[in-house]
Image (tube, rainbow over all chains, first blue to last red; front, side, top):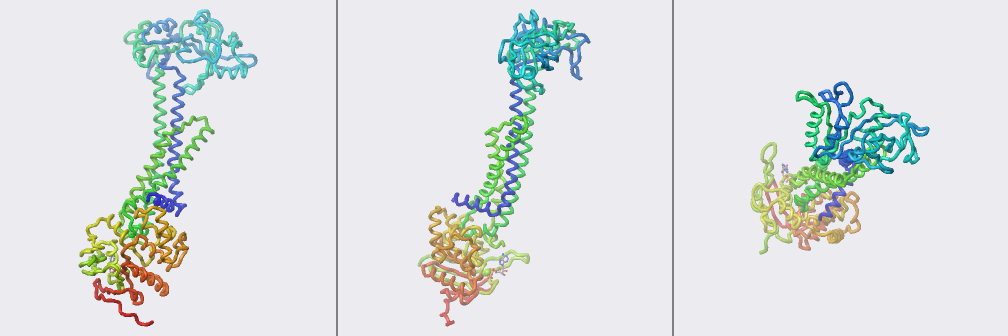
Length: 406
Length: 234
Ligand SMILES: Nc1ncnc2c1ncn2[C@@H]1O[C@H](COP(=O)(O)OP(=O)(O)O)[C@@H](O)[C@H]1O
Ligand SMILES: [Mg+2]
């Protein structure tokens, strides 16, 4: 019985092929765009999650200078307000896992005939731990290197590619501002950060070496930046409070004065970036859903036309024994078949479009089984929902009225 | 005495028109027993089709009672009526009313779909009925490929497929030439000899001559009801 009806629905679809195809097109476009948009949205979410995982967890950046409504401005007009001693004091606080003072700037690296401008980071060994940065070869420098300001360097992948090409950089000597540095370690690849900067375009050297031999700052022992890592996400509010109190005390800031430092919560920034992409992908999905809705209305429209055109047929069927539910089932099946067929084609096109997007751009695309299932379920629901009204109308026809219809 | 196939008592039907209520059928009484072949006659507009639609449970009367094989149809809901039509009545229409996109075999088998018969039996019985009306070779043709007379034979095969006790035919030869009409009527007469009760509308005496009993309508009433007179030589 059901099988016979499926066959009839199939025949009805074939009876007016152009119309069926045009009706299906609405579903094809609807499902296709939902699948594509979800793939792009989920891809963006995945990319952000990936980036966040390279950042290091539970991190603060402590920045020298005070903040105001207009942003950051330099404190007191003089040099950096944060000192290495401040860092040591902070590392004694409860809930603090790592503190790494940073002095960084852009410098030209030279190796043989090659040169390359990159970010030179002068810091302490804690930096690698705070950023969860591992080496692919060699060893990190230690506290003794910082104490005696040795000329050693850890080099990022982008700098390796541009300076050394296919040579192994380990043990080679490169020059920063004429000073020779021995490459003792090669950093693992991290990719872009949340701001889109290449994190691998860098060289890490001991803080003391950087201040004395590379940047030549008059404020040795003071820095503009410090990475502060909390032991856990739960510890972060406490760290924020105790660190602020400690620094205000150490810097002798009066009650009515602003802080001469600024604590930026990278975990919160990461959360908001993740939230932004989540909202964006939801928005994309929602916009695409509108076309699914339009596709559904198209089906309803055509089914209504079809019911009117086939009124006499419905009358004949009723005369020879079709019950109301038989007619209802017949037209619902037709609507469902159109939407499911449209959905299948739409899925293929959506997935194809996603793969093409992936091939032609560097956008990350994630096609999840759930998204596909949801699109399919929604399409079926659209078929039933928009097919129901025309089918109900057909089933409710009066046999004799329908038979008289020309 | 066995229950009549058709028994109507004071049956009437008024249509609502722009000009008000129009009584197309006025208090008709009729009884048709099993095995009868009744021709309904009368001028155009006398209410024959109105009456047939009521007999076919396609329309509902404004007053009066109708008992089909003993059941008071007024007490049945729409779906019960559909089942009753499916099992009890075979319809033959003036305009054949085959479904144009279905093969003849599928057209003939359609009542069995609604009777819940499985596919293989449907097919076998449809072929058998097509054979009975002499169209076994056309099982997989479409209705548009055969003549009007052949289409009406297919419609008769469809009417027969569920072995109904009653066939209702409203001017089944109205669209056919006289020779084809004659063939169709011979077919009906044969079915009647096999025991099927037939009620058939026509306004042609030649056609009505095949029936055993002739009921005449005028202005929504039965004006005469008598056995078919002996046939004059042509
Ligand atoms: N659906 C309808 N609405 C209004 N009047 C109708 C309708 N059907 C038939 N009539 C009228 O009822 C009368 C009987 O019609 P009908 O039963 O078709 O007659 P017959 O079949 O004997 O020619 C006619 O006057 C016709 O105009
Ligand atoms: Mg008529």
